[in-house]
Image (cartoon, rainbow, N blue to C red; front, side, top):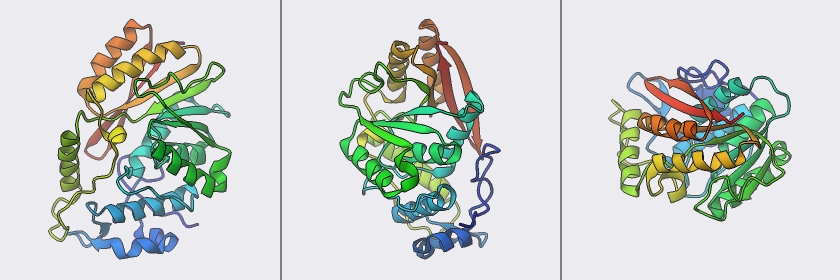
Length: 294
């Protein structure tokens, strides 16, 4: 399969650096072609407010870079930006080094199953993906079952208790090199809608031909929860201490930098050592908080 030239100021090992090569992407997935438009500079792009176009772009990227031929998500579920998701994987790979056999727990794997796909196909990692939503687990399992290269690499577990994150998922005999998580970062649906509108406006800035609309995908558990990101991180930090001997590194994306210090304060009281990994994606800085009790 041809590999396109790709997009942004990403991790050196991230294959999505540079601009998307839509010629190669559409060769690998012809269904993407009708969604290609020109930006004000005359370059190929897509309308990022068109949910279907974004889904086809993701399908093309996943097929081209991760050899996953069959991937889809149900209507209304989160469609993840692939380059940023891949960056998280490559930065935490730096954290653990070149260990050959790696087992990762992905908290909130979602209907898209994106972190297990990227991690298993980039580095051969084995994954347990957990989610609180049965529909997300069902769709993620469909993706795994439809692709032979995922079947022996990814297993799924349903979190049956909304009040817990690791409890009920990590069994007494489980050992993980890493856990990872992209927490729900909004406290309400209203906050999520406002933030998504800002994101779409920024992505399509200066292109008058873009139709106004929202590429809003994401169930409640994916995008918002009571107390938002800060409360979720506090709960995660406290529960992580229970499994200190079973996990080498706990990690989580942190969307709001104001939530870093309060989370570290909780973790240090529990005896954890913390490290912040900064990821640069153009003008955007994303942060991963990593901690260990070992």
